[in-house]
Image (tube, rainbow, N blue to C red; front, side):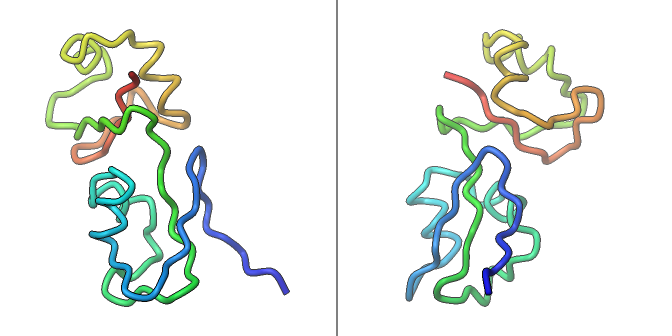
Length: 109
């Protein structure tokens, strides 16, 4: 019987090995710990299981922007000097008119 993997749109899976922690996985994959936790809402960070599949969100540049109060995609585009269409392409599924404070957005290369 196949185990159902959690959704991981645009990302890859990491299989937990003995001794892994989310902090170490975040460092190894260059993904902020907050992003890793947000991508795995059903994972108990204090009780990882060997063989468990963790979603590693894909952000080829490895650069994330944490949405602050008042941020819009246009403001983020201006601040990072990245075209708005490239930011949107790097973040499929993002709701441009409904950014949430604390949300992480991948900034393209």
